[in-house]
Image (cartoon, rainbow over all chains, first blue to last red; front, side):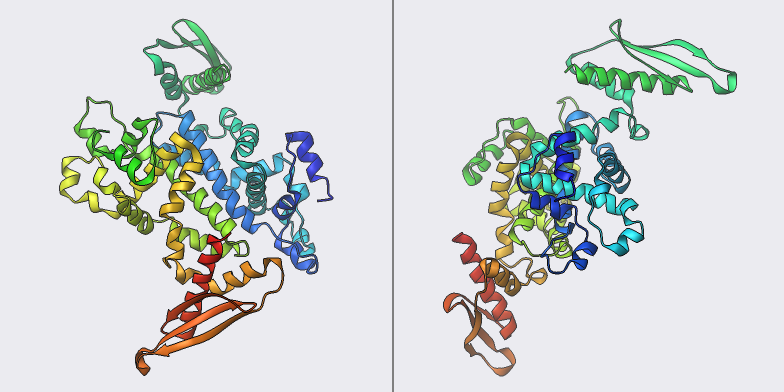
Length: 232
Length: 232
């Protein structure tokens, strides 16, 4: 690939491909292959088929291990929210992958480069190529930078209950006394902002803000979990 | 697990679990847990969630590598035929897993032990447990004994074109002259049986039978592929 992708990956993700032809395949759209019939090019669909399955497993495994008490139904809903066009197309843009897609002229004109379905495909095909070139540990490392932090950034909070998660995390090794306290609230009555803290056995673990006490408690629990996971 | 599953796995599949509690979880139905509330048991659904994703990837990877020229659409149809309740429930019975499921009495009475959906779940949860205990290489080894040979046994022939596959396999390193010949046909006109051979550059590679020349050619190509893959 002469368009700078290999340098970009090396510089920003410390990823160096051995088989760069896999990257070529992963970033080439069928429309580009059709316009260059004599170059014996491959387009990304087969490698995306593989990458899709790699992402399913990598995300499943992460959720299974991170949430040891979450029932299967909730794990499935969380996985569905993470492994989807909406999320993957955002990851693709975050990684600047949109700039490196090889598109035919017609597709370029019709703004395919911004189309979420194509961006999602390219994210998956990149994952497929990385898996083939360097195996699952490299994929796990990459998505632990790009995908999993989104959980702590709150992308999937509507599906998560951080207070329950914190309780289960802290009580793995026995009973712990978890308490939430209101630190302050300000703003006018119709737009109050609460700040809550959470502590375990008297030790302050986190604090969070929200427009209700409940939302501020969830934010405090999320902050506590981030710290606890970082210190593990 | 005191019911002989660990011995069975060791004897028939050379699989020895380190964390046998994973096997307990994988073979325990929720109805059994409900009937034994004081034993702090887990049931298989979480581990099945993981096993499902492991199977998706393992089968995808196998198909991707085995059929280097098959387009994504055909790979997907083949995967869907392999990763499904019908196939997995048969694999579960073939491995005698049905005998080791821990079921509640009510479920036992309603013949849950023979129910394809439950058998499929148990096959997946076993795969999830094996993955957690021993990683993907152990899963790949197990399903290369149980799952992939079914391709060569013809389970998915309605989705495959062995003649095209043989041609692509043989022509990877350049042109090869592939010829099919009728060796014989017998039986009455309304029930003829054809025997066809296939050779490459004059070397006989396989023969096959069928009720039409076309079916016999497909069978011959399949036999040739089995031999070629075995000699790789």
